[in-house]
Structure formats: structure tokens, C-alpha cells
Amino acid sequence: MDIRNILLDPVVTEAETPLSKAISAMIENEKSDALVFRDDEFAGVVSAKDILRKQVGNPDKVKIETLARKVYVGDEAKTIEELAGMMLAGDYSEMPFATDEGMKVLPKHVLITLLDKDTLSRRKAEDIMNVPYFVSEDDNLPTVKKMLFDLNVSKIPVVDDTNKVIGLVDMLNLLKTVTKRERAAAGELSGEKKGTEGVKVSSFMSRDVLVVLHTETADSVASKMAKRATTCALVERDGMLAGIITPKDILKLVGKEEKGIYMNLSGYLPDDEFEAEQIKDIAKRSLEKLEKMVRITYAVMHIEKHEKGAVKSLYTVSARLGTHVGLFRADHTDWDIVATVRKTLDKIEKAVDKDLDKRKTLKRMKA
Image (cartoon, rainbow, N blue to C red; front, top):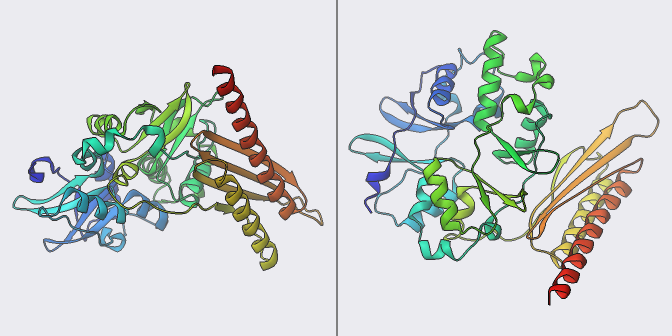
């Protein structure tokens, strides 16, 4: 296939363009990235994530080029596998290509349809999905924004009380909402300054979400992503959220696999180096134990310190573990931060062990 036939038009901005106009163009075109040019020369890419991370002041006075970053430029002579590797290495959703008609882009959700179908058809959605951290529609904007950046993800599923998918929040959703509030507040891009605690997820999440079954092949998922022009598929098992798949997960099937599992720690960490190392060591040993029981796809732990004015502080530790058999959650609150971490992870281990025992019993009954 001639790759030039599937390249798309990007959002293009000049280096001197005010950030506010660039944001408007991205929102209008439903694009998370914009290409930046200076004197007809490609200067880089700006993404919704870049804009939200920078927390700039007045976007009318900030030039878009100040946020631009260099990225790989595609080469038509490269193989699909080589392009996939370049996209895996780059933190952007569209790869720019220089053509006779100007700069074009190859989105990840289009690139995955060019991968070897035999390779993709041998893997199921549950084999490549990641088990995500999720939110409810009653959570607020600051909570979601913090999660997106603390967990270094670009999308967070929204579920109801039964863990059924009802929506999705991504960086573009967030940028739209923050920008709308910024305009209403006469130029403050930082939503937190205008009381965004009252902005519920239900007011800005996407409800039109691609949902696939855990048994579908990666080839089927890739085709559906391309047809819907979306960069995300949420995976359901028994009517409940089981995982999330992005084009990056599919691209990994032809690239190098990432080795190793780590616990993503967020929230409060003690200033005391000994306590901090104890917490990290407990997390490491817990993961090592769990890896012998299940295949881990995702692990995160959040620590919250409650300031109550008491001599001793109260801590709440929340842990989430994504595995090939499902998602496990545990919480614990206590006065000793190290003990709280240990008890939370103990709960996770017991939950996994109980689930595996249950599966073994059902297997024996079926046999």
C-alpha cells in the first residue's frame, strides 16, 4: 500500500499564533495535536497534554511555538514495523510526513490497520489490554486532571456503580472544559483558580465510546478503532469494565515488549527517607509475590495524608492492581503510614488468592 494514500490533513499553526487560537483549532477539528511551522519550516508538535501541563497564564499572549517539541518525521521508505517503532518511541498521536502537498499526518489508529493481520488475529483483546484506573461520573475535574498526570495516562474510563462503562475522559475533553471556563473567567487557563471542584465528570466526559469484548481479536479491535476514528477501545467482560486498549498497545505486537512491572506511586510520600524506602520496598516485594500468582498489567497505589490538626496524622492508602484475570482494589486507613501500606497490599494479595481459588474450584466442578 502507498502510505501517501492514507495520510490525513493536520491542524497547522504558525509559530506566532496565540495559544488561544491554536486551542480553538484543535477543539474545532477534534484533534489532540497541532503542527507548528516557522517560515514554512516544521518546528514541532503541541498536544493537549502539553498545554494542560504548562499551566500558562493568558493564552492570548502566549505564542504556540513556546510549547512546541520536536518529533520524528515519517519516511515513506520505512517499513510499517519501523514506523510502528518510531510511533512507540514518540509521545504523540499523529506522525507528520512531508509530502508534495505539504505536511500530512499518519494517526496511530490508522497505522495499526497496516500491521500484519495474522499477527493481530492471534492475540485477543484481553491479551493486550491494560487494566485502567477509572472514575465515576460524580468525580470532579481536579481529581481527573491529577490522575491523568500522576498516572501518566491520556485516557480514563468512567464507570457506574456496577463497573459498567458509561463514558471516557481524555486530554481533549479536559482541554475543552478548562478552555471554556477560562474564557468565562477572562483569561485564566488554570481551572483550579475558578473553583473547578464543582465540575463533575458527567458534564464533560465522552459518552460515545468504543466498547469491545475481551474475546475479540486485536485485528478486530484495530479495524473498529479505524472505522470510528478513535484512539481508544474499552474492554468489557461479563458486562463490566475489564481493560483499555490504545493503538500503542497494538503497535507493541510488532515492536519490542516492555519488560518489568512497577508500582505507580502517587499522592503523599514521607520526607523521611527511611519511611519512603520502606514503602517502596513493601510495594516491590508485594509485586514480586503477586507476579508469581497472576500476570500483572497495571499497578498503582495512592497515599492520602489527612490533616486533622492532631499530633499524629491519619493516612489512607488506595491500591489498584490490573491482571489477566481482572481488576483488584483495596483501601486501608490508619495512623502508621508504613503499616497502612502493608495492610492495603496484604488485602490485594488476599483478594487475588481468593479469586484464584474460586476459579480453580469452578474449573474442577466443570471437569
